[in-house]
Length: 109
Length: 117
Image: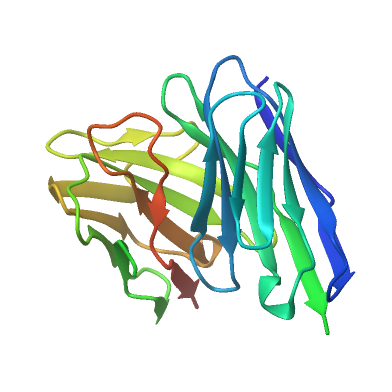
């Protein structure tokens, strides 16, 4: 069965305390892996797309990496404005998107 | 700026009412749009794929007569929750990908919070 699992479910960080979020997946055919940020009461905001193992993408304090089984979203020296729920999604070879349950990140000053 | 617009953002209505939600792609044509439902602290669950000019494709367990989807143009898809009941209360989100290219990310609307009394 195709699955997308994110861990941890929640993460509380002090400002400046770097950490990583995990997205592990088991799909029969991966077209791409996507990371989104979702603020309360809002739709997800696109962050990154990763297509192949070994690929890395960076944006400000965020860096996403991909292996054949999982993806990591590294948050370096987070700020309170990085508080959000981070979602990963895999796109199957036939086009369908499947989302993980998300990691809720809270960054305190 | 936003590339997908969803309206309304919040609806509160009585049980038995039908509610229509609009999803528009603002600066691109979308032959395919997606409708999701999200419960508190849970992931997005795909309800259906909306195809311009043809019938929507519904996920298993989603009642097509309950959730009517119309994709009449390349920039507009609508979801109508017919005869809504309290169990239909949820956060509904639409998304669209820029058409014609594989591996394009989905861009999401800001969602509609539906509350049925």
